[in-house]
Image 1 (spheres, rainbow over the protein chains, first blue to last red):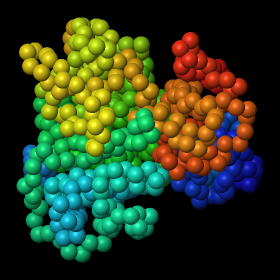
Image 2: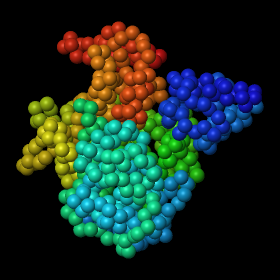
Image 3: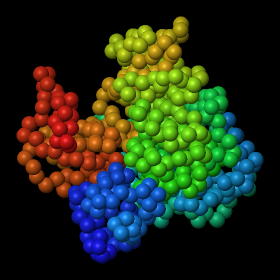
Image 4: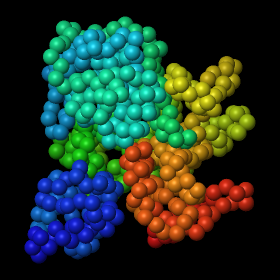
Length: 80
Length: 500
């Protein structure tokens, strides 16, 4: 799966959980840039992404994710 | 002022110790002292002496922590204002507190039209020595505004004397003692009174506090701090652990020696599972209303065969030294052992009252005769029992105050603002337990489904983020009981079923 395809799916997960699409995700996007992206929704987004890609994140990976770029890199690593 | 004297001693004794770790940058007690001195100079020269209540924008930086200490040394109270809360609400709070001056560590100009804003980051001139301007211990040390059921936040005034009593009571219980080499988590917003225990208490012992940057996902950053910096002393809300629960198998934090929960009811199973992640830690639960200066009771998991619970919620424990606790019925009569009623607290940690709010003061404080003398008690609104060992058990709330991610929220405050916007439509605000065991706020509108963007945009300008409803439901008719009152239980069940 290409990075673009991963990003598109990530975008869908964000829209579904946050119930809005007033954001544009790119590699540098952080929780600060997106309305409603906080602890509780983060947890739900992560679960949604895990289901979409059929993967399971490790806490260590989640801990080191500072932005969308890190999230995509981790997904790439997991689906390989 | 005892705790301030102790703080000044720490600055001397532990001057080269790290005091703060903010955004992974360390600041020593000397660094902190240097900022305190500059802010003290500014307070003495830029703020009228008669001005007692000073607004403080609670940014996550050394200047903000230094400002609290400086204000105290100058005998002034801080009124914390979250930069993340709506301007309207913040201005209302500051005006209510009769604040003319605000200390801020950003270049944000939002408040300059209404208040004198002092930027505390680029102060050039400084005082030479730290000293405490001898002020009255009955002066106010901070005013925290909490959610108010009528739509207007209530200001809880805590005096220097209240804070001294808290620190003394905590010292008395040796088990909470912090060591100079401890690494302590400070996960609370400075607008939230638990922060007093998590930032002030460690600083009294020369320890280092680790804060959470605003742009981080809190529970993951807490874990990062535990992992990367090997924290030893944790005080946290159970919601953090709820989020980490799916990953407990990956956590083995052997360096944590102390872990205390507070600010929300603690689920026994969650606590016991978490205990396995921190094998060397002593575990505690704690409880205390803002009106009684942060912490009132502790329950220790040590040396107990069976952890005391009520409906799966861990006991609040025993009151600290010099605190009286009684359970009363609706006629304000004291009830006996194991009888359910409202918990009332008396002692030196008791607030002098709500700021400028006679109505609330009359409602919330009463005189009760116990052990032959009459004392002023605070009616907590918490339904509890006290058992034969004097352990307090939490049962529920008497009113519509709920805890959302540790924050105290009056459902009435949210309802008030929504009703201001949507006239002639019946609505209800309900706290619901989501699938992950967290409390969230749901809005139920008695109307066919429609776009609520405008309502939510309005609400966002009135209440902080944690008070925003996360789910909206539409119902043809809200359920009412035979007395014509909204049937919250029925509504909760209905919402619960729609989540399934």
